[in-house]
Image (cartoon, rainbow, N blue to C red; front, side, top):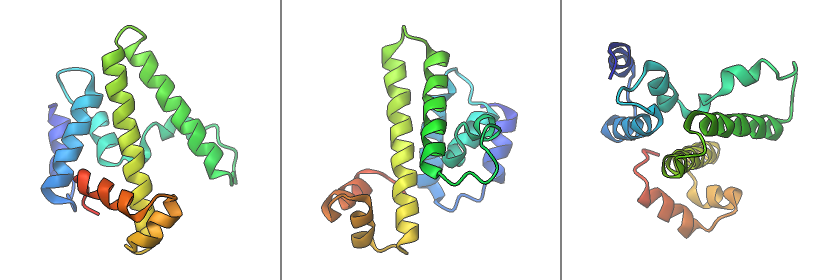
Length: 146
């Protein structure tokens, strides 16, 4: 880990405690693409909602209201950047990165839905259009602090 990365770790409040730290370090080690976890990679893993937003936000027209289109554009740009970074030769590494992205997006979606429903899992499952059992299975399988 770089010195700047260590400072980022020390400065973060860690509301999810050890679970959150473990998840962030797991994500960062996968996304790093090298032996050293950079400060930028670590920051993206601490706040996954900021993945690849900065360069894309410059192109968003002022007052844009279609969040779904923006999300689609961000997601496509991020996936394109993964493919460019890894290349077509390493399917195993590419698959791991895509899976990690999928897990991150699922976590964000579930967290935001639970936040919206004030923790009401039955209503969250309905909004996510999955069964309550499926939501509980996901929450039990993952080590998210929700």
